[in-house]
Length: 158
Image 1 (tube, helix red, strand yellow):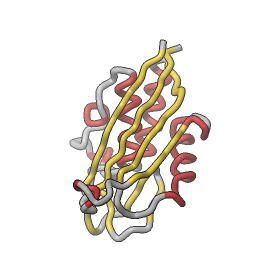
Image 2 (cartoon, one colour; image 1 turned 180 degrees about the horizontal axis):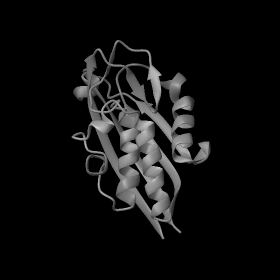
Image 3 (cartoon, helix red, strand yellow; image 1 turned 120 degrees about the vertical axis):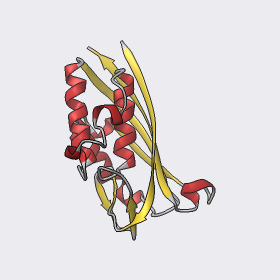
């Protein structure tokens, strides 16, 4: 049986935080605000996986009220989600994701993001797609107020 999961995540850009996307620290004067490292790409992917397996959302499984997750790398959360995938006797077939950001330019970081995500989820590099786009100056991402990410995942139940 195949299952599809879809997710969206967005975080506000603020001073005094590192910008982490797909587990990569991106040189930029602002970072994303959140309880964890606020990695919108990893969050969207994690939510899509949880959704495909009908396991709720990130907030239910990794609540921001739990200090254990304060400042945690979202790649560690993805590793924990991988454990849930195994428990559900499922496997990830592929992931397709898109980061929506006016700045910074991300093309030189995409391969490392893909590598980090594949490693955290114990899948092959060619099972992970990461793309980036702008909104041509429209909306909150276009005004450089935040960054968003979309993800879709195809899962197979064993």
